[in-house]
Length: 364
Ligand SMILES: Nc1ncnc2c1ncn2[C@@H]1O[C@H](COP(=O)(O)OP(=O)(O)OP(=O)(O)O)[C@@H](O)[C@H]1O
Image (cartoon, rainbow, N blue to C red; front, side, top):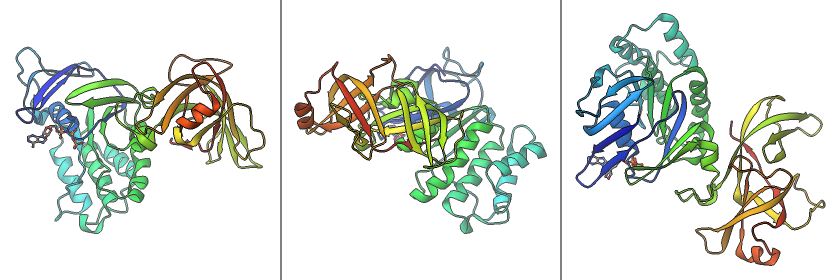
């Protein structure tokens, strides 16, 4: 979708020119008012846009030449999931789905319907009315409803924002399944780094109606100059392979570009590709290897650069493995330490250190 200009209010201009992968989840991240919802509305054709050109997997939906909508809104094969599920209160879950099914532009085959019900685990909820469903269950019905139109593009605008933390965690596995089962591009707006880290393959960072940065989610989320202030969420997102399972101690060994890490065993099998997150605040530094410590993960690293943190007492130390220095963001570890420790340890670019990693979380 290379080019879109749209207005929501006199002084707000959405001015973007980008392409995203034709499948997988593209996260859209950015401060409030940066234009994330406006972008989705433009893509859906709900927002008048001038000079806009939109192509989805080879098909032109909107042309830049005239600004005229090539494909009318109701014919765009889009599924849209909002923060609020907005189900019809007088219909059961099944009634809500039947309503959407009737309005689908193409007939929905029984096997496709069954697959969607199974995917969202709705068979036990079909007779219930929305008022007797939890927020997470209602949202699963809303996602199923969006899938029933056989979308070629799924737009999700903060679908978990109205749920409490427990419900969010309940529904995230369904979103992952969706990602694995449907080979369509999903545009996913969220304010949550946790959701983006877990779901997104690709990431767009928006600010003031523009795309500030775009790229693979792990690399972008691992940058210390990430334009959105992450604070305690700052860290690195790494792709790793499980290489060993230690049943005696219930641990897993995973290999990423920068070395091996031990993690708590949560059932992943050797050979499995996982995504892990190491928060900068969970990494401490020593000059020599501290073997007399409870910390299992100690990596010999070399400092690449040191940057200021938004907290003046802290700095961000980015490191690469000593043995095999790497050039992209996929093997760096970042530590957030005090400026005082930086001074006491004499930390500077090029210096050798040991990174002690207190905690590693598997995000998917
Ligand atoms: N209904 C509306 N009418 C006019 N202007 C609007 C409307 N909704 C939003 N805007 C304006 O459009 C701009 C972009 O808003 P938008 O909702 O797209 O941002 P956002 O990044 O999705 O924000 P948030 O994260 O808070 O949802 C803002 O300046 C906002 O004030």
